Structure formats: structure tokens, C-alpha cells
Image (cartoon, rainbow, N blue to C red; front, side, top):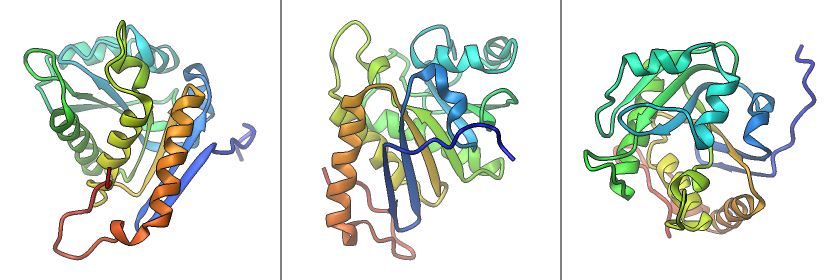
Length: 208
């Protein structure tokens, strides 16, 4: 039995095959979230984890993990690599490159990389993930994406990949991001019929 106190989610969603929990806490507390099959890291081709949300994961994870990641670099655009881990609440760490060759990203590029990470997790018999909301990383030095937009992209990416995903934990390090997820979840509950899955058809994404 776990000796950790139960952590209540700040927001949650259960909609046609996908269960998402949002936890409001510092990245340094990532070990407190429920265990999942994989912890996702959004990176570039180098897989470097020396700053932003990835540094939280590196510092709390296995010794010399970043050395193992560099051995697999460069990570091609839109591709993902996986590493077994023991010191964070997941079986594997999956690093996915969300940038193109010019180190730029957009919605299509991000969702391709997100999908690659989920497929990699599925090949490792995984159905659940944990990630840290990337708002702060995407807005490093200058504002590029509002927290509401980032939350929409994350949830849309999950919805469109439900064939590979059933549960997700999101760590949101600031209240603005938590509120963004809450607003999305409230809107989705009002229009649940839009997100029903039908056999033989693509998984419907977020209507935003």
C-alpha cells in the first residue's frame, strides 16, 4: 500500500473512453501524481532536458538518464524514443520531438509528435500517460501561446488518439492553466455527443 497522501485532481474529465485528471502542483512534486505507463517529455532533436519542465523530470528521474537520451539523438522530427525508469511514477519515459528541422513547431507538428509518443507507449503495452503542461516552455522568453490555447491543443491531441490512450495525468504548475482545463472540460460536458466515437471513423477532436 502506498504511503503517499492521496492527491485530489484540480479538474477531471471522463468522456467516451478517455479519463483525464489535472493536478495543480509544482513540477518538483511530480512524484506525487498517480502512476502511469509513461511520462511524456516534449523536446527537440537533442532530447536535452536541462531547462523548463523537462528539468523537473530529469532531476527527479533515474541517474544519468539524460546521457542515455543523448545516445539516441538526434531524434527525428515527429518521432519518439522510450526509456525505462524507476524513480518517477511511470514505467517508461518517452521523449518526443515536437519541432521540425528549423526548430519550429505548429499544431500539425505537435500533434504528429504527440501521436508518435502515444503509439510508442502502446507498443510497450501502455495505455496511460503523465505530462507536465508545456505552457511555460512554449512561452520561454516571449509569449507565443496563451494557456487556454495550449490546453486546447493538449486535449485535442488526446481526443484524436483515443485508440492509443485511455487515461492521462496532466500536471499544471499555475492556476491559469488549471482554469483553462476546467473551462474546456465544462464545455465538453455540455456537448458530450460531439466526442462520441464510432467504429471505422477517426476519433473526433476538440471543437475549438
